[in-house]
Structure formats: C-alpha cells, structure tokens
Image (cartoon, rainbow, N blue to C red; front, side, top):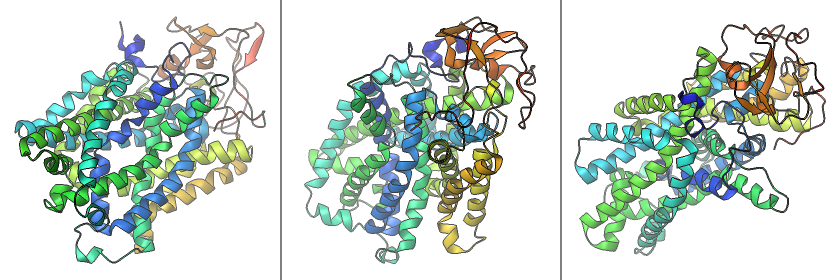
Length: 555
C-alpha cells in the first residue's frame, strides 16, 4: 500500500478530517495538545530571560505576550476545531490563497523544526549525562528515535500522551516540592544570581523586549491545531466541555506558560544556589540538583532527572515531529505536485533537526526566536485579522473558509500581502534601520501592521480574491467518489474537475500538475466564471459561499 493511502500513517494530512476518523474524545485531544507543557525549553528560556533582565521584567514580559497571543490564537483554534482542517488549510481560506499559503507552510515548518532541534539538544544532554555517550552521538540517537514514534501519527500519539501524563506529573511535582521547601526559596526565586548590570528594576523597554521575543510562540497554535482538527463535533448538552477542551488545548497553552514561568523560576532560583547559573539553565543539571536535595544521592538524583527530561522531550518532540511532517506535506505538495505520504516527511524533519543540533542551535535559541518572531507574529496576526475582523465584524470576506485548490486564487493579497509587508517592515526594524527601540520591539511593528492591513486591503479589493469559482455537487450525498484515485471522501473535501470530467478530492487536486487550473478562468486574478465542462447535471448544492453570504461562525 502506498504511504499516502494508509489512514493510520497519513492522518488526513492534506485533507478535511472526516467524522469517521475523528474517533477520539475531546479529553484525549486535550491531553495530546498539552504536550507543550512538558517542554524543557520553557525552563531553559525562562532562566535565560530572568538572568538577562530580572524576575520582574521577565514576569511582566510573559504577561504582555500572553495578553497578545491568547486572543489572536483563540479564533484560529475554534476555526480549526469546527472546520476540521489544519492551520495550513485554514490559512489558504483566510486571506492567503492556495499558493500564498505556501509561504506560511514554510514559516510553520521552520517553527516546528527550530523547537524540535532545541528540545532534541536538551534531550541529548540528558542522554549523555546518563550514558556518557559523546554529545554528537546523542544528537543522532535522539533524532532517530523520533521516527518510529511519529510515523503512526495520532493513533499512537493519543495513547502515548495519555499514558505518560501521570508519571510526568508525579516527577515534576516531586521536583517542585523539593525546591519549594528549600530555605529562602521565595527569595531565590525572585532574586536569582544575575549580573549586577541587569538588576536595574522594571523598565518598559525590558518588558516589551521580552514580550517581543515571546510573540514567536503565537505560531504554537499551529501545533495545537494539528490535534484540534481531530476534535469530534460538539454534541448537545456537552458543548461547554467541548469549548473548554478547545480553549485549554489551544490558546490556553499561553496561560499555562505563565504557570510554567513560576515553576521554572522557583526551580532555577534554588539550583543557582547550588551550581553556576549557566549549569542551572541546563534542564538535566537543574533537576539533578533539585532531586539531590530530596534523595541525598547524586546518582539517584541524576537517574530521576534523566527520566524526567527524556520523558518530557519525547512528549514534546512527538508533537514537533508530527506537526513538522504535516507542514512539509502541505509545502511540497504545492511546489512539486507530489505527495509521497506524511510519513515520508518525518525523515526530512528529523534530518534537518539533526543538522540544527550539530550547528548548536541550543546556545543561539534566544537570537533565533527574536528574529523569527517578526515573521511568525505577522502570519498569525494577519490570519486572526481575517477570521475575526474581515469575516465576522466587517463582512469583508466570505464567511465560508475555503481550502480547496479548485476554488481558490493562487495568491490573495489580503493575508499574503499583509504578512509580507508587516514581516518586511519588522525585519528592517530588527536590523536597526529605525533606531534601537524599534529594533528591540520589531515584532510589535509586525503585529500592528498585520492587524491593520487585512481589512484595509480587503476593503480596497472588495473581497474579490477569496473565491475563484464554486462547485455544484450532487445534493444529499455525504460522500462522493474521486475520479482520479477512486476513493470516496466527505463532500466537504470534494470539487468538480473539468480536466478529469468528474469530482476530485482535495489531495488529488493538489497533486495534479498538468491541468494548469483549467477549472478557473484565471488562477491569479478575478474575472470570468467557472468552466462548466464536467459539471454534474443532477440537483446540486454550491460548496463555496460568496462575499455577503450568511455569516458562519469561525471563532
């Protein structure tokens, strides 16, 4: 069987996820989404920010970032959960167009790759501490182990994440208890051992500099969305539980990040009284010091610390590898018109992560995230602006979220143009063109521009770049056959195809390279009507909604 035809491997990576596949409960989806909480990157990054700027500045910076990213990602999370499409497909219909969203697929793939490499480096540190393997060998081991753990997608992930949470909670709880009961724990938490030059009190610039770097984490909604798209439909009487699972499993991770901040500063504050600040920022050393206070034995403490770090990193890197394989699938299917299967891109994701680990991404992560935040926040803000402002508030774009190539223009200037302009301006500012303050706060420049430009561009273009054509599909049919692959898929995944003379699924449509968009009079600009060749003549329903149609809830 071809990899792309195996649902256990594929997880509907380029398609609408049908109800028959979405067999997991909201609780199981929520537990899978929580994998981000286990990331040891939070402990290392929190320590870096506290040591550089002080506790007060870091706390306020995290709070500002949370206040910005939570509402931005809330609408996207609900749209993903209700429409059962991942963030790549959502971006297509939220102002970017079919090929325009290729850029955001690359941005998203890069995000998952950065954190896979960073978290992998932390995992390798733990493996080296336990086995005394040379660090570069450990890099290879932790990269290779992710392949079998993510090839089977959600069918394995849901079980693994659910089964390992009790052990993880117990290990982290014991560590927090050990640090919290240490003498003067509150003092060392708020007043860590930082250079005197950084202990200057709370300043607006320091707070927003930290918040600016944290804005890169807005792209995390993509990884949450890769699981939220598999949510079952909300059932009467349980809508509240369903919404709570979406909120906590999606944008709620930014709220949990503040909790992690307090936990990490508590742990690092104690560890810095027992070792150097640089060593205390390394998770395996951090938890070894904390557990040693409890056990009184270095070897036992190291084993506990190694177990916690390895378990944590496996949990989060399953998410990073899985989401990376989805984003690479979307990216290359549009460029190459080929889809060898999601599992094939797991190897690319792991291989690239190994390269980044060898290039020492661990010691450059703050710089990498500060640069990446300019692009990541431009994407998410433009997406949120279209979903919330254009679709719901001002009705400047179709209420329907269209993701099928057959119905979309290749590039929509509303989202794509807004993101490119916002990210470019922010990166220019990041390199000092507008002064030191603008350099430090460049992601906020991207944020403001990406929120303002989509409604402006949508108003100027009158929403004409969203829907290139519509399909008339037989009424009353829940599933339709694909003329190309002979499979049957939900009607929401289908379109009419004049090139093949029948209906076609979204995946076959994406990988068709010879049709040259015959179904659309122009894939690049509005004009004309859909080509009728091959349209069914039976009673039909229109599968795309024009601008001004009844508003469909997207958030």
